Amino acid sequence: MTEPDTGGNPALAEATRELQAAEHDTRVAFDCIALGELDRAHTHALTARVEVDAAVTALSAALAQAAQSPGR
Image (cartoon, rainbow, N blue to C red; front, top):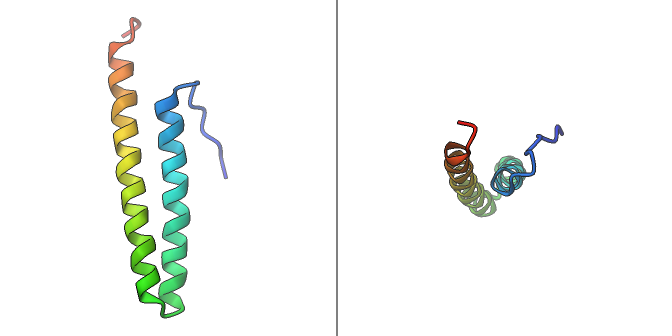
């Protein structure tokens, strides 16, 4: 897996972690569907959705920080 350069930005680091977690839960949900474990698939799909929402929030914070930076 490629590690993104977050430039030391904690919001970008958090977004990265959340997206990696969402990727994992998405794969687990997919596997659960293949195994016929729909209840577990549903749980992991919802967890992935929450993690993606958290990543969007972190990215919004990073964008707000970048907009307030003196170099812009």
